[in-house]
Image (cartoon, rainbow, N blue to C red; front, side):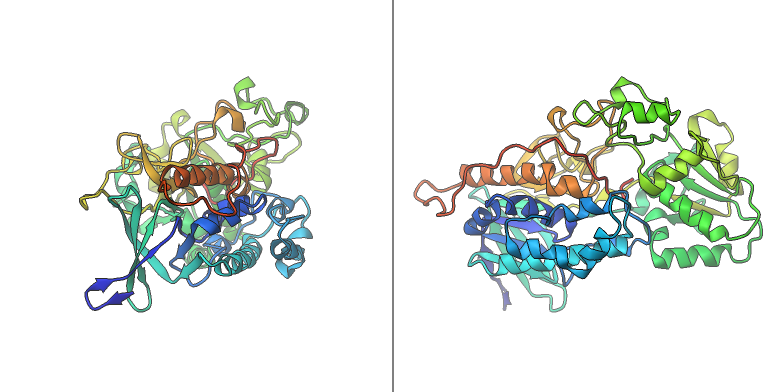
Length: 475
C-alpha cells in the first residue's frame, strides 16, 4: 500500500487482471488436472476492480444465452474438486439445469458465475501464495529489468496503490463500444456520429434493463416508428428482438430494418440437418471438419437463429412482416433508410479495453489492438505489439481479444472472425493460456530457484472434440 511517497509491492508468479468470466476461465481449465495447484504454488494473484469476481457484466443483459444450459454447468459437473463439484446443487445451477439443452436467461447465468467465482476465490485465498484483490483498478503494467512485469493497482475506494511484480500477466479486462468508432467508421457512406447522435443507441445499452426502458421512452409517442439495427452478429439480432418486443401491438410493416454487410449464417449440427431444413446457403468451407457442424463458430444459435430463420423463410418458418433485412452492398438506398429512422441501434462490435503497456524506460508500447483491424492477441493468446509480435509474458483472453482458432481446434475454414465463448474459455482456450503460463514460468525461473513441490507436467494442448458455445454479446 502507499506509505507516504512509497508504494509497496507484492511478488507473485502470475497476475490475472480481471476476475470476470474470461479471467477465471483458465483457472477453471487448470483446476481439473492439478494445474491450479501448480499455479498457486508459483504464486497467483487475481485483481478485479469490482467487489466480487466471477460474473462480470453478463447478468446485466436481459436476453437469453446462445449456449445451452448444460454447457454452462459442464465446468462443475463431475469436477474432481469437491468445492467446485458441489456447485451443481447451487440454486442457480439447479435453475439452469431445468432448461436442459435450451437457452438460459443471462441474469441467471450471472448468478451461477458469481457462485463459481466465490468458490474459486475461496480456493485461491486459502493457498499460501494465492490472493484475490477486489476493488482494485489496474492502471498500467511495466516491463522490469528481470524480464517480468510490474503492474500498478489502485484501490477504488481509498486510492491506495500497490505494485504487483509477476513473471506472467493475463489481461482479461473486457471490452466496450467506444464512441470514437462511430465517429470514424462509415455506414452506408456516412458516419453515425455526430450526424445521428440524437437517434443513436449502442447495442450494449439496448440489451440492458436501463436501455430497454430508454427504448420504450423513445418509442412511446411514435405510432409508426421506423427502427434500424446495424450489424449481423448475435448482439444485432438480439437488439432486433428487443425492438420487435417494444413495438407492442403497433402496426408496423417493415418497422424494423436489420442492416448488415454479410450474409446471416445459421448454425446446424450437420450438413444433412441443414439440407433437410431447406438451407443451402453454405459450402464445404462452412463446415467444421472436426465436429461436422455447419457454421460452428460463425452461425447464429437459439433465439437469434429462430429469428433469422424466420426472416429468411427457411423451412417452414413464417417471416415476421415487421422485420426487413437490408444487406448493405445489395441495396443502394441504405442512406435513405438511415435518414428516415427514428431510432438507430449500432451493433458494429466491441473493442478490447486492454491496459497501458510500458517498456523498461516507461514508454508506452504500441499494441496491435490500437491499429485498424488489429487484435489484442495472436493465435496462441499472446498479446501483440503494433508490429504483430508477441510481447513475452503478456497473455490475453476475453470478449474482443481477437482470438482466432487454429486448424486443430476446428471450426469452419471460412470463419474470419474472432471466437468468444465461455465454454471455449474454460476448455480449449483456457488450457492454451495455462500452458503458455507454465512455459513462461519455466523460462524465467532462476537457475537456483527450486521447482515447485507440486510441479506437474505441462497440460496437454487443448482437446477439440466438443462443440463451442459462443458469447451471447459478441459482435
